Image (tube, rainbow, N blue to C red; front, side, top):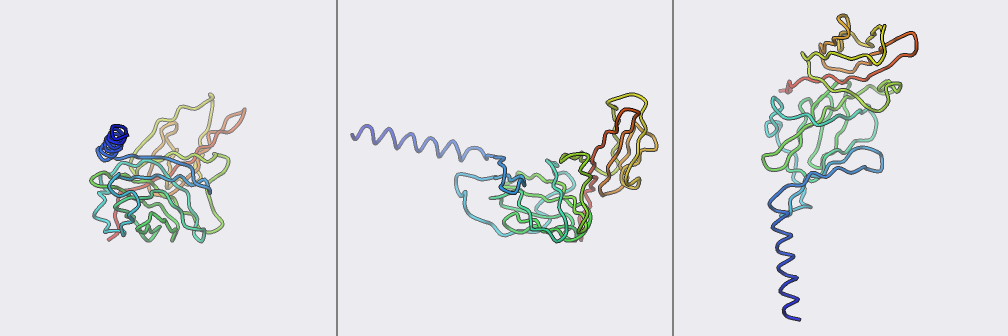
Length: 210
């Protein structure tokens, strides 16, 4: 019995060391279909750390990992849980608290940064005014680009025309080369004689509100 107890204790210790050596990024599906990312360590997987200053996330270089649609007046959203740091590049668009709760404030696009230790990531949060939202004909997905970028689109069929719901955000005047001019949302329609194809675009910048 003593030998079995020692083996069990050694196995538990090895598992703890293994968890502490690497940080896990686990993606699950929340009840309200909002994506939830848990970034935890073995040392303290339950401690909630208060939100800290925006300078703790380098929005000039942080990698953008995804997006969320939100609407002013709707319930807050949760994206990342168990992190050491949360910050919004534009709190006037959406704020985030120390538990990763994102509250839409006004129309626009902000980056929500989150991280643990020296590892940080961010998502683009596109906020609509009450009663507005993304074009559902484009489905639930969206393409995320930074202001100033361009993209050469390959049309699924030949002989198409391009239309943008907001030329100030996505300029299609040189289509199929698309240009991303300013932050916001636009739906681009690729129309042909057979059927139209629609695509949602979220355009962000890395400007941080003072």
